[in-house]
Length: 100
Image (cartoon, rainbow, N blue to C red):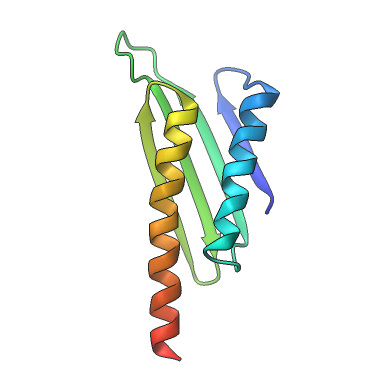
């Protein structure tokens, strides 16, 4: 799956982008009709430790799922967002199966 990763107001290193790509590729196991996924990485200018925002949009035929997580690290946000997307994609697949 092609993942478009954009980092807002900073440059993401290659290891982080590869980590995100690897995690997003696992979504294909749960729903194989994913068209495209966009990931946005943002850093808020606050004194709060949880200032990193991971936002993902996954497009499937007829719908799209958006997940936004705020954590201490982008890796933690990625893991939380992926688990949320897994649940949503599983639910969508079960709904489609029920209609057939």
